Length: 353
Ligand code: DOR
Ligand code: ZN
Ligand code: ZN
Image (tube, rainbow, N blue to C red; front, side, top):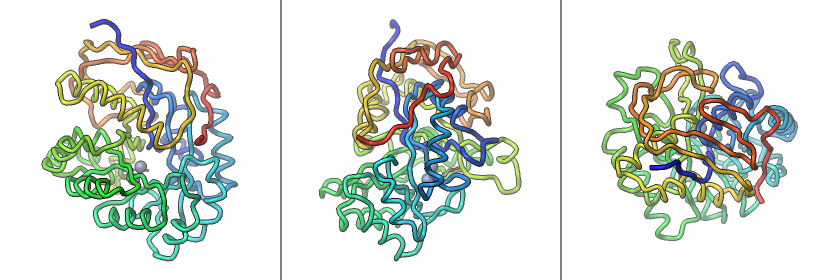
């Protein structure tokens, strides 16, 4: 098959670690990894050091994006106790409000009823609220979104029952969308003995039946998002390994391989990684932007040589079919044959339309 031209990917869930954990990643290395994965827009999560929960930190992060980004970056503002007004004041600049309802990496979490209600009451209607919600937290978030007329996006849904509930709620008209990660689609808990701490993330790898459920109900899923969560190998090998794995550079080859195997259509791949993410978050268009793929290239995903700073992959050793050759962003070649050409500062800070 000749070279295939596709819309560039938009990844609505990444952790780029700027400002304070740049030994893991920063906006320059994270957006280099994005381009090397065919991704020209990323939405960055606020569980950073310091967390993005007020306009002072938001301004610093935004300035850092403008200095360093090689692809376009949108920033979430995080929900904390007592910052509902401060968060709402950022609603035109942030791509959404992120609420952590369950424990994960970092201290950002809302687990008291009063703060949670304050955020659902105060956040401007029509702007997205994204949640890290697992199991029982999912109906809690969906119920609050419904009651307060909010648009809810459920991050990294990982279990069969969760997606079945989302399907039922959507059928009743719930104002919700959801994403799944490549790691929950392509790995499950039977991979844990082999992966060790490299297989630890939140939500954790689920059962083979949960994984099968995600594939069976893929038409309920709105987006595929990586939850790119870079941690160094030394940190992952420590006594208290942080949860999360890098994903920006492995998602496209995994999905193209699924297309080659007949598990996914190319149209659905584009809907899940480009069209729906941009619609849900009302992102501005990137004119003259696309990727070029060699759909026949067969290769093995390596364990080093990635652009993401930690430089390892939980998918190392996997055979893949389909390889990114070129990324064009606003008419400029930003990546070609393994080399990132876009300079820091060529990416833009984006906000919803
Ligand atoms: O595995 C995860 N890592 N899940 C999350 O929700 C957060 C992320 C991180 O920031 O490392
Ligand atoms: Zn999360
Ligand atoms: Zn995350």
